[in-house]
Image (cartoon, rainbow, N blue to C red; front, top):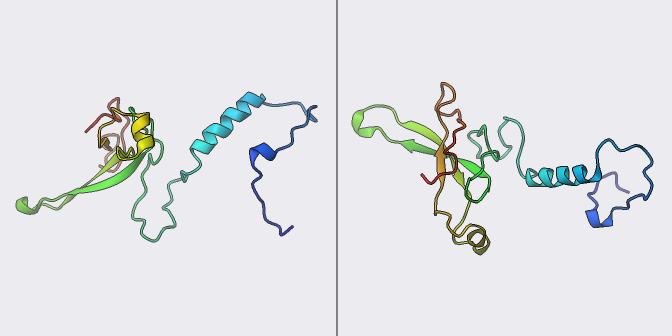
Length: 142
């Protein structure tokens, strides 16, 4: 042993035929929780920025907004609108974009009618244009 914790694959787990303690949840509830946790495993919780050196912002609803069409997690993107000709400062808008790739055969098979791009603007809940809103149109082509 080198003192490191290693993940043992589920198929190698040993289940006791007789419980040693009373169960606080059913095995089915536990299995469901594992599936939900695995789905969220690639998402970083919290509002702190990523450790990546190019990180410039965090997205409040990162990995929690889903596309209505394919149910994939949407990711945050920033778009700047130039106000060059009006002399006003540029405006930055935050959107959530579906990660569906129509060129990927698995993505296409799962949602053949999915448009090439699905985005939703994150605005309207607070005073900042960077504050996401929850709205019934999330995931509609835009």
